[in-house]
Image 1 (cartoon, rainbow, N blue to C red):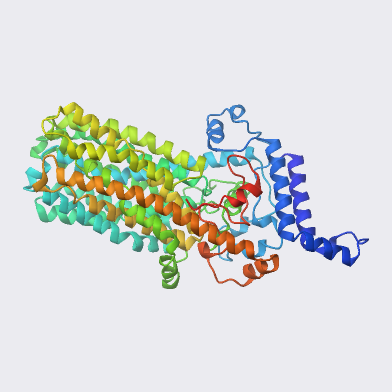
Image 2 (cartoon, rainbow, N blue to C red; image 1 turned 60 degrees about the horizontal axis):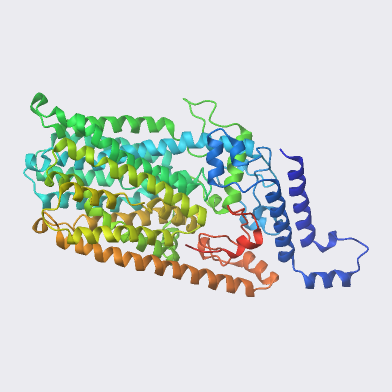
Length: 622
């Protein structure tokens, strides 16, 4: 631990304390002089000045610790990143102010409260290895679990290349209906599943759901017609529905708000990599057609279902309730020491004190649920979730069928679907990183629609008889788009500002995304095949609408933050203190909260330089 940095922290704490306690000033100063000084500079101004000085000291000691720096450290080369591992990693927060800290204390039943210590300090050499370890234990698990989910919900696409519809006597409309009922069931299960998860804990609920949906997925081996096809799609949808918001909530227990979006990008990267791995698996499994008299797609469902069942059973032993609850009969020593637990808990709460509002086995009451549903400042993100990926949805769902129609055989169709999945995975990671780097989300979402728009226009006007490789190239470019989904999930989580709202908003946003999928599953119709001209014209209109929606959301959030900052700035220091002491506003409704930006009292060091005074005015929601 750097002695100089520790002394600076103590100096700031003392200075802030004395600024708010006139009795601690020099006894030789008379009462009138003290009142004059207070009139000239209120305590908040003093505090901001001190924090700015502290930020300048941090900047002088080391460069800002941004994502590329941490990535260099991950590669075991800290010299490239410019990080001095002996620097203090403890970031300034509301807990450094003795006058404000009482308003943000953890809930009495918060599971990590016994490790909370606002005076605790640690270095980057202590924090960074812990973050790396959490990545291996939490992020890696989440990626493997998402692989299991996506393998079981999307392997029907590979089954289509093996005459799945013909073998069961189904047509395109039956297939669309199956996808629709799956997504309706998925959607209906999202919020109830999230509420159950909050009550019993995601570490218990997620493995249970994984085991159950894997059994149903494997049971598709015995499909015998339209009815059994629809029943299994409904059951898989119901059991998978809460998985994504449950995992997002679970990951928020371990990562800071600035770390979560990139981890979510890795999470969705697993989703995309499944779209790469699944065709390769199908390439081999579908060759089992005729083995013991069964079709290849039946063996694929059975074997992949058993694989995901094994992942579900492993998850029982891999997941833990929280950073301080890692011990179990099969893990008697736990993951972390007491010192490491203190680092993990305090770095999370310094970043976002609202994460201690509830404990991890606390149910959300109907009143809290209603309050979260009524948080209208999150509705614009839900609206975006409802339509943002529709332009790419139908071409993606029908990719393997389209390749078959272009003249490629079963196995080539599966292999040719891989390049766009690799490209979109890389582009998604780049977009998510860029969103944190420049602190923009709505404008990057608009950029994605600009990517999609010319591609769907080309699909709408592409003449019949176009060379199959030219058509394949166009679809590949379209489906290589950088998905803004992880960026938007992190945006929604960051703007929630309370555990109960974060729990509900994750489910509501994902429900909007499922409605998105339901809409896109019904755009390509049987009477519009094979070019789907009408459907592609609809996609052009939706992409154009999305572009406008993103810009309107950006404008709305800028206006909302301006209104809040204006109201907050008009208040005197006494009025601000009275507001903090008496307000019934909660979460993102608080006047001192800025969506996807910085609360006046929630001070952080940003990636382009830690000037607190400058950071404080950059309160953009988007």
